[in-house]
Every structure is written in structure tokens, then in C-alpha cells.
Image (cartoon, rainbow, N blue to C red; front, side, top):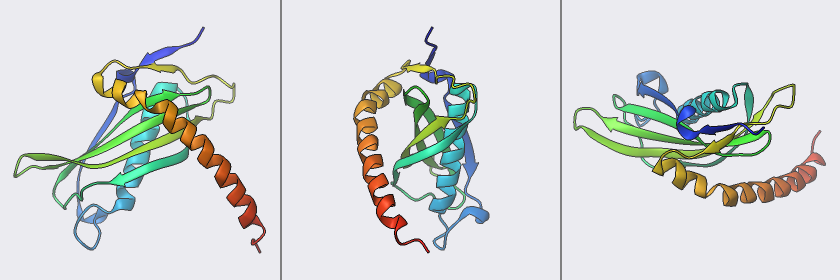
Length: 167
């Protein structure tokens, strides 16, 4: 029997304050640090949904929308937006918040693909939307999945080309 979970069952949220150890030369959160945090939150979300471990297979469309200055709060949120037999797509949204001005803003978004590392070959549970946001995000999954499959094919051809230059 196929296991189905709702989007809220794996929703993951992590809050942080931009501290000096994660800033760039402009005193904003460094993009690499945001990517690391996004991958961590996406991994937790996938493990929560899958009830087992998994690994990052791809990161698609990491969009840096607005910088997050030092001292601002930022929140990374992740939810499952589509599933295959052994994989799932995880959407990550990072928002910033100026606590002094009481202003929230969208800072970054990304789609991750995680693959299950279950040695038993257990399938990833299917996903069902239980909010308007999840429903909207899930609606685009088939097109994103198709685009990823086409990109993966092109990547394999490119890898074959690059392999001839390895020393």
C-alpha cells in the first residue's frame, strides 16, 4: 500500500540572526552560507518526510532575491513539493526580517532534489497538499521534474565530453 503524507508533516523551519561569522565583504549574509543552511533545512525536511536518510542530488534555481544585512533575522523554511519512487523535490524559501523596522522580505528561494539512501529500496512516501502554498508549489512539480530529466541528460553528455580532458 502506498504511503501518503501531508505537506505540513515535513514542514521544517530554522531561524538565525546574521552574525559576523557568516557575512561577506558588504556585511550581508554570504550566499554560500545561505546555500549551506538551505541544504541543511531541505535535508531535515526530506528525512522527516522519508523517515530515513537521503542525499542531495541536485539544486535547481537557487535565486538570491534580496541581501540580508548583519543583525537581521532570517528564516529558512522547507517543504516537500513532489515525490518520485526514490526521490523528492524540496522547496526552500529564505525570508529576512529587519527587527527594528518590523519589516519582513523574501531573500532567496531554491528547489532541491533528494534521493533516498534506504538500503531496503523503500519508496518515498507520496505527498498531498494541505495548504494553498503547498498546492501552488506542487502544481509546478511535473514541469520542473521534466526539465530536470532533460538537464540531466545534457549533463551526462557534457560529462562524457569533459572526461576526455582528465589527466
